[in-house]
Length: 270
Image (cartoon, rainbow, N blue to C red; front, side, top):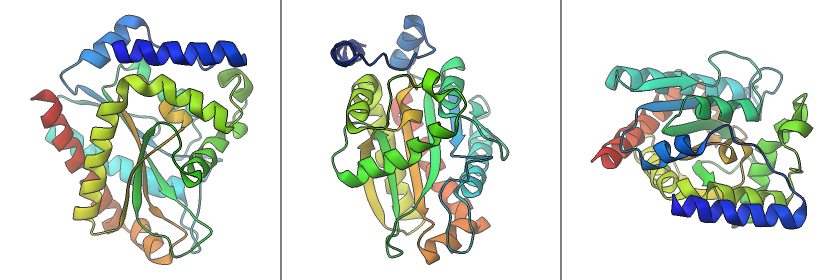
């Protein structure tokens, strides 16, 4: 909790200096205390990226990010429910509908989730890039990290009330730096979980891993619990598009994330 207070203080100071009012998090202090101090994983929120009018990125064969992300998330949810009946699993969407970033994190906060998992697919101008990477909130260490975050965050401009919900956020590097400070309270556990995910994706799906990275994703910034965003592969790569569009590929990715969840849960609760 001390880390959260420090992070919050930094965020408020920067906000005061810049006039940035920031996003209002729908959680009271007792909620934050419960989440930070909890020794059990009782509630998980699974987020399938994009949806509805926002297809996300797409492959040369027409595979859409929103469809792949949804299938992986649903498969992951089934695995968690089957293995851990006592764990509550909530979804930000279970069909092809548009859900704004503000509401996605609000769902996690309202349900006092202990973990937030957002699934996406990647894209690149180069068709040669392939592999996975998992993000937590943090400062951008490379221009590429910032570019990925800015691409995913650009969806807010499709939202009707984005100026109200994200007042002061303009997808600039400074906005992303301020976001990173806010999430400091949950950084260590987020990184711990992200490392497990990349390890399992590398081993279980036998694919290249770009490792764990940090960047300013809006959907992670507003969450008041350890949170990760998974880029399950590049749809801009023909082989990965084939893999991610297949039932077998989606199942393997879901299984890898589930194994990471299982390991993380055991470590946290022990």
